Amino acid sequence: MSTIDSELLELLSDEEAARVTPAETSWLSEGDEYVDLDAVDHGVLRARATSGRRRHRILARRALREETWDRVVERLHHG
Image (tube, rainbow, N blue to C red):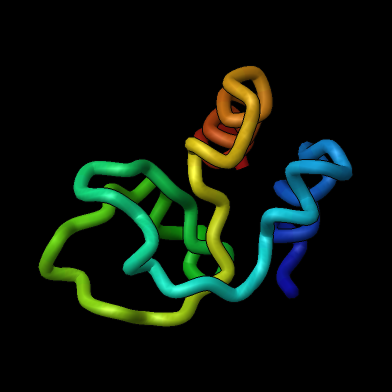
């Protein structure tokens, strides 16, 4: 795990951190925002219907509290 991965995970509450598991991106709905922890340099991504099933460690916006998501995005922009 890279330093930025660790820093992003430290922003999460215990409840939110429990939701971060390897997951298929197919559970995301079209347009859902997420951060792929295996490719954080890509920043915030949007799920697409054509993205297919891939396994990633992701932080999905809808799985986080709004203030946590805001801190994640801030960290990505100033990392």
